[in-house]
Length: 144
Image (tube, rainbow, N blue to C red; front, side, top):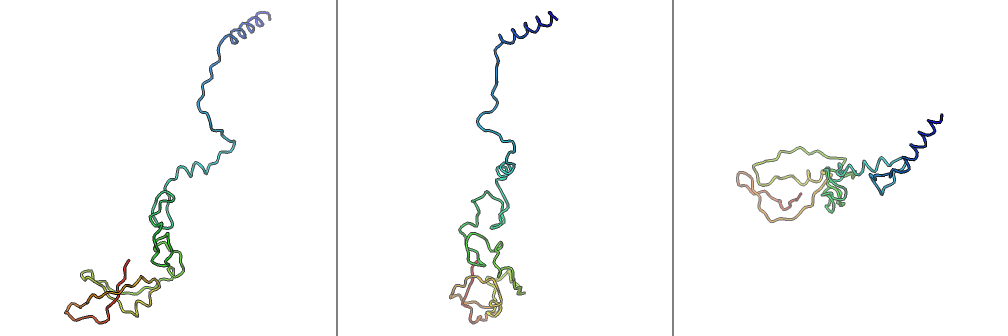
């Protein structure tokens, strides 16, 4: 028993003489018992699928910002992603586009059936058919 006590005293004396070194790994932030798991997900996701333009980009850098919708006239979204009721009720008007022509025409009656209307601008261009015959009452154009 005496030997065990002497050994214990000697080891305790040796421990008191040694310098204790503590190495700091990270300072500053305190970690809670329940870390915010959403914060790390938010930081990891810098790009997201945008509902206003359809692209993937960082928040607050949407290409649709400041642009006017051709459907509802409101700003900050493209017409393809417009949520206005008129855009959801689409009217399909079948007609053939002539890809070789410089213009494509639509009657006023057909244009009035459209639920999504583009802005109309007056023009003074004379339009003629493939035979050279002049097309009457062609005095508007739309722009995308």
